[in-house]
Image 1: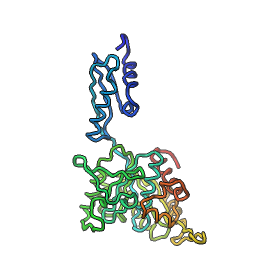
Image 2: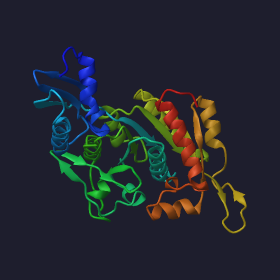
Image 3: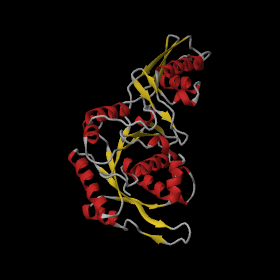
Amino acid sequence: MNEGENPQAIEARLRAAMPDKIESRVQSARLAGGRAIIVADAGDMRVEEREVLEIAYKQALQGVQGVEEVRVALVAERKRARIIAIGSGKGGVGKSTLTTNIAVALARQGHKVGVIDGDIYGPSQPKLLATEGQKPETSGEKLVPIDSKHGVKVLSMGQMVPNGKALAWRGPMAGKALGQLVDADWGDTDLLLIDLPPGTGDVQLSMMADSKPDGAVLVSTPQDLALIDAARAGQLFEQGEVPIIGLVENMAGYECPHCGEVSDPFGSGGVEKFAHALEIPFLGRVPLRIETRLAGDAGEPPAAKDDEGALPFNAIAQRIAAWLSGEAF
């Protein structure tokens, strides 16, 4: 230690000796009587990762002028990931496929995203994110999500139950299962998307009570029947004081792969009109494309590519990201 060196200069010198990856976690660094004391954030780390981090600080500061001993205090306060629920109120509107592609699009835009398959009875995310046959490990009493090849972590009952086996659970059991998925060891994930089952039943109510989302996205096809159910889902979120981020119109128009003619088997524009009538933001529309279905079956979300099929999902993800940051869209 140089005589007369002030604490700010000492901290800067200690930080300069560290690799960027571990320096970014340092909350404070000081030197007293030859002892370097480092306080660092490790709230998003598992036990074994924390041990590696502590060793890394000690190795980085070996040989630094004035340092005879290194002590490391790791702060373990975990930051809660923000939660967005994706709901529809009605099955068969493409909500799971939309959730997957929004998650992949958000991940490609720089977010650390996880997907929770809340459809306990009919899980789809293992196939959509190509994690079928992979079982999650545990860290202590918590599940450890599986890393998909698309940069999105995922947890689903479909990863823990033999393929094709039906779950005959009552509602409270399904709600408890969702709670375990939410309370998993999500690491540094900053955003969780919950792919909810259709309807407004026990799973949704349990989620609202135990893991209240920061916001909700409603998905509907354009026809009136689907919109009626979407309205019911919206009422559930409003009663639970969960902000509705906006509505998405899915399966909006079908382009014939042979002649190129566009038809509207489910109608057109109904969701946008519905959103305007209720003064709810309209997030965008996703066309009905056979390529999207084939890509989902293959575990290759269109949003993972840089082509026309990714565009609607990218646009919706950008609007959700704007909402998260408090910007208008």
